[in-house]
Length: 257
Image 1 (spheres, rainbow, N blue to C red):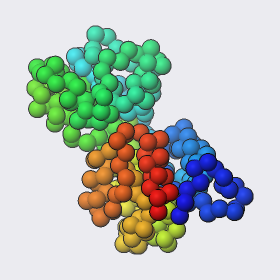
Image 2 (image 1 turned 60 degrees about the vertical axis):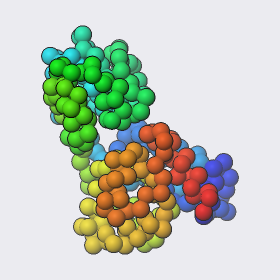
Image 3 (image 1 turned 45 degrees about the vertical axis):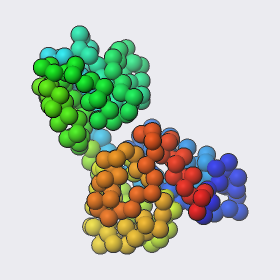
Image 4 (image 1 turned 45 degrees about the horizontal axis):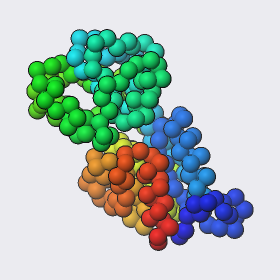
């Protein structure tokens, strides 16, 4: 199984194009992911496992620190929320860029794009201060617990809910039939939704077996832990927590097989 990284033979049928499942929300992120995979000579299986439902809520305005954990959250509030004297924190450069594009200055972006990285970056500076976390309804406990342990008073505002699209599941069928070459899980929720569909179809065992024969990549340790806790073998976790790094790492592994 060899990925055609240069795209050679990708469209003429002369070379097998590995099927690579991608689970990003059905917006620019999924379209960009499909374009990237196609340009690298593999066959994208666009199977969005996440749909965004905005709540209409905005971050509270009495916190000393406001934390945005995703590009989605930043984009949802950027036109309606104005920063005051708060220290604005963003996990990841895409999140920071979305805020800056709307004129919101970002004060802290941790070197490690994760909840743990942000807690480490803030250190003792949050001791005794109110910290507002603005994110989805499926954020992990790592960030609030870490901030509480650092002495902060933590409040969370849910900016959007992440739900499973009704038409999701093509990748589950392919995995269960042994026709999936790789899977790119970008959050714990994508793993959970994949397995929920497999359960509903009575294909959980077959789907997990199909993933064992494929190359499975996850972004970040929390996603890896979720996958392994549910019996999915994870082959690749890139050092950089972004989709392009995940794609490159998974395709490197495919080329080596």
